[in-house]
Structures are given as structure tokens and as C-alpha cells.
Image 1 (cartoon, rainbow, N blue to C red):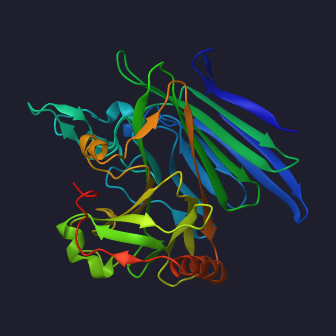
Image 2: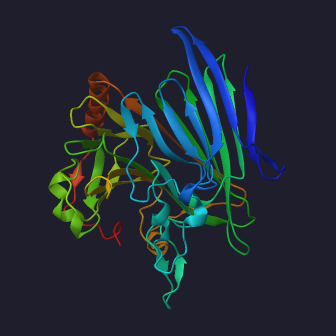
Image 3: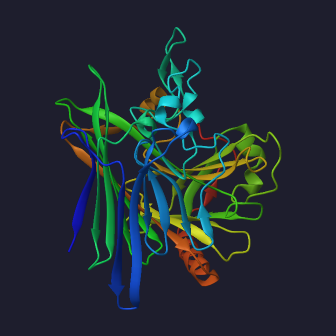
Length: 387
């Protein structure tokens, strides 16, 4: 029977300092222990940050309740889903100068495997005519703490869920409710994510949403590759143009090397389903990301290949828009309209590919999808996509 544990509820003044749920799912293949724990971190820039760790027996992942319900890291067997960020986080939002005058204070807290960007804006910082910051880099969502969190477990079915709610609001401004649910199965290496955005105001609004899904060493290291089926793709800027011949592979690190981004119109099946993956250099391991293109019509591949610990990382980024300034995205019709009291939902799923057979099976699916798509590589930035 399912049981639900309320971890945080600001309206009812509920807060659990700690939680430790240990149980066993008795599957047809035998008993599978699983565990859900909640704790608060102390010391340094992580001080005061609340986390929940879930272990399915095959997948372990850590959710940052104080940072927009982002996922700090995950692990399945010998596959680590993380990157070695220079900020050495996690970082409590109180230490992130989000509205620093240069607009890039967000980067001082950036360390997660899954980080959300939005909702008012999610791209490059934007300034008014007087040089005053209007919208900071990647928005506020990742630096807002959850106002309500609950964990649900069902030993009979083996299902584990973690649900959190975040509010992005201001007086005379926007009022968004962002809700996320992580769902996993005891004994499984799959992670399902279901997010929603609700406009709580009585007037229509617009929003942006992008996911930084950042993976580095050891899965993404020299020789690793990215696979995706696409209709068309272009480099974001001159740096990406220079690296276009290696857009889908990862090379030796170079100190101070510039970041590169590639913008995609992915291919999808007749129901909108599509998927991408990162594959380890030996082809024995990988991680796939599947979603519906109707939810995320745009996709970005971010690569930075400096020595590990500086920044060696790949970002797989499903999005509703490209990460340009908000005004550029609005001019090109990529802000998402949302009616008063309307809710829009977004879903995606990760799967750890833990053998050469699983890797090959996913890659063949991508190749099949690509066989009926144009696969056009545009050699220079597309003006309507790239600011």
C-alpha cells in the first residue's frame, strides 16, 4: 500500500529535519531493497541546503529541494551522471548573486546534472537602454526553494515518487507555480520526470523553459559521442563553426577552450517521440533521454572541453525556446503563451544504457529515425535561431 510523507509544506508550517524510508519490493525476480532519505547539508556554500536521496537498487540520485528541485547527480552501476563543476557545489541560493550587475551571477551556483532554466526568461542576460539588468542569465527557477515536497512509496508495486512545488512570483509581475514529479521503480535504472507550469494570475502570460542536463567525466571524456536524429542543425556562433566537423564527438581537453553550442530541430516519429544519448568512448555505456517534440520543439547541444575540473561537460538541453535574450525569442515567436489559470505539462525520461547491447539498440533506433529525416547541417548560424 502506498504511503506519503510530507517533507515540506510552507502553508501548514511543516518541515522534516530528516527522513529515512527503507523497504523492500518483492518482485518476481526476488526482493529489491530501496531507500529514500532526506537531510540538510551544513558548512561552506552548501550550508542550509535540503536534499532528498533516492536509491532504487539500480539507480541512486540526489534532488536539491532548495535549488528548484534540480538533480545534483545520479549513479547506476559504474555509470556516473554528473560533471565536475568549478564551483564545487551544491550551492545554497543565498550564496548566488543572481542579479549581479553583469547578469551572470547564476554561474556561481551552477553544478547540477539536471538544472532548470526559466520561467520568466532562460537565455542570455538582457539589459535595458540604460544598461540596467532586466533578465539575468537563465532566470530564477534553479535558485528558488520548494514550498511543498512529498515522497510517496509503494512496496507492493515498487513505485517511488518525489513531488515538489516552486513558486516564481513578484508583486505586479508574474505568478507561476512550477511542479515536478520524479518517478522511479525499485530495481530500475529509468527516471521519469513530469513537470508543469501553471499561470496563477487572471491575465494571460508567457514563459520560457530549458533544461541543462550536464554530463562530464568519466562517461563524457575524449572519444565519447552524442547521437541524435534531426531535420536540421546549425552552429550557434563562430566558435561552433570552427568545431563543426567534430560537433558530435568529444576531443582532448584544451585549457581555456571556448564553449560551443549547436541548435537543433530534431526528428521525431508520427507521435512526436524523439530521443538523444551520450555514449561512452568504448561504446559499452551511455545515458539516453527521450521526450516528445511537441513538449520541447527545440534542442541544444552544449560542449565545453577544458581540462576536467575547469569545465569538461556536455549539456543535452531540451527546450521550448533557444537560450537567447528574452526579447529576441519573443520577436521570433518562441515564448510559450499561457492563459489565466492554465497548466502546461512537460515530460521526459532517462535510461542508463548499461551494456553494449543496450547502447546498440538505442543507436539503431536513432538511425532508423534519421533515415526518414533530412539531417541538414547548416554551416553557419541561422539568423532566426541565433542572436
